[in-house]
Length: 287
Image (cartoon, rainbow, N blue to C red; front, side, top):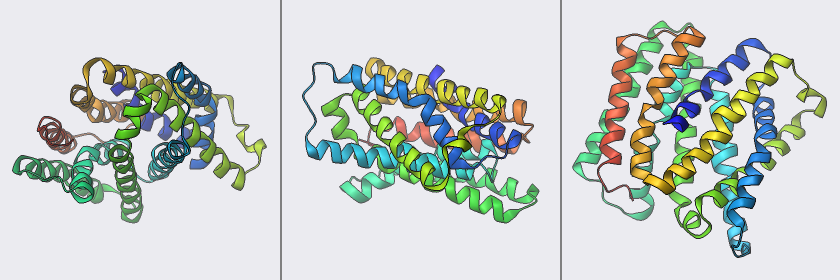
């Protein structure tokens, strides 16, 4: 539950950073990874104790998942938050269990059952409800479409990451895999940053460093470790169900810290998304 709350605060930290300082998405991600990387390396070292060395194939897979899961997905997410509210971002992003279901059917031929089809319809109707509400009140429909599209891309890329990494996690263990994949993603992020910016641009106002510290520790490093431990202790289904509090927490934080509009329609959308997620995670067919 603490991990879910920490992850829920991520969008809030990002929106605060955008609102208080002129900073682009890749610079913000680079700062986040610089603060988080020592923790990721520590996870990789701890998880590798007494384990066999990696094969070339495993290094290749780790590099791919590091690129996809913590670099590409994060880049789309940070970029999308420049255009849409934290509440809508979290609802779209939280549709990833439904996307995992579809991808599993497409890639592995797993059947989608009637209950899961209902889950897909319920989840996506919840997103549509909130999106249509924001479309009515936004001053820039174009920005809303762009931002929502970017977050949909985040959800899809993260779902691909989850669907593909199961075998490697079983071989390496969750702690070692997460630490190594996240460390590799940090290299991708920093390479992207230095291809566009100079090191001097990492010097930002002190207030922004505090925001990035919160983003890196409260919403990245600590909840990643907590989730790994939770997966070990109670299993993925219970973790998924408990994590369902995430969108509600983000909606509440968005209202309190960002002044975002929250009304009955917002909570209806959240209820539909969470209902769909609950149907998927308790169906036993997501594999």
